[in-house]
Image (cartoon, rainbow, N blue to C red; front, top):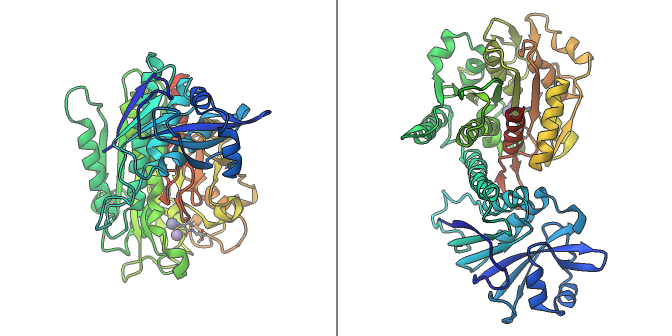
Length: 503
Ligand code: BES
Ligand code: MN
Ligand code: ZN
């Protein structure tokens, strides 16, 4: 376990095995960033030519290690690029802090002297360090990561003694823990995490968080397959029917006294997506343990909002199912009845996410919240459109705008996409049921999915985040992002809720 402390101290005089320093591009060339001026002075004139011979350009997240030869109190500098001096935002320092902590190979103590002169920057530095340090090693025989863990991280900040800074530093721990818990659930393989074990894990996390005096009070309800049947949740039951591990629906409620706004979050919880009878090709199936990222995100967002004590009523709905092939599995051509009675003709069992979300959206909308946001690894079409770093955001104009603005504060990439008028006709084109789940028209699959979901929102202002691209990183780590589950969307949802708390 790494301990993190906040201190107002000189980076040149701090004793640590290594110190992280930001480098910015200025009109006069590369220079130490805010917070690291003293290091620059102590190191002397040789720094700039050294960076030049190392080929260091100061790009965001670029890292080099440089010995200090006793010019300062630590033997090693970890220099990390922050890009242009004028553009040092919280998002930039979060990425840089994450990249820097990952190159620490043998240091028991690490000081971080990145720009942290405002509460926002400080929170980003502290979050970046904790997010960058995340690894998933539970299934490694030698669970010690290849680099020995840092025992102590000291974050240096000129405002360290101010209350706002202390609060920001504490919030960073809670936020990073929430993102890292989301990543862990996403990374757990589907033979470990199935709908019942996922629901049990939520129950355990809920018990842990709500026990003891002064703990937040959070409502928890779990629907098993019998209760789902009693409530007519044909979408969740239809999708989950093919698996030996039965489906679940988890609802969490945070209802602080005096809250005037009620927001509902709905997250897709497919613990594994084979595609069902419309089976996926082998290469598209391998990472489908990620298909519950939306559920993990809404659950951890709700726990985080409760820990932070934000004065907004929040409900989180997480339908959980495993999309498998068996004698009990749904077939293309089946008609399912969604909670509330709308019937849906299934034509592609691989478009399962919208079916489980439909039941949960109807339940969420029945409570008449002020807004609903769903988050789902929903369509490959959105990945084709936007790549693997951006999520699509669709839905009611005002909710889309609020989510976009929240994502900018959070430093996550959202891109608004339309729901064209023609989609309405297509969604209503089934010859046998109220709605067509899918129509085999190749184009605009992510937009069709959103138009389908809209049918279940009952006019409640609604936003839909399609995170099929950014939820899971199939490549190597970058910035504060690891390989595998990223926890994408959690900080955007947090800022979205926070903005409603401020109103
Ligand atoms: N879980 C997938 C979407 C997905 C794709 C997530 C890639 C993450 C990465 C979803 O259930 C799915 O299979 N969608 C289909 C929809 C189609 C059948 C209309 C798709 O995108 O191909
Ligand atoms: Mn699918
Ligand atoms: Zn899926």
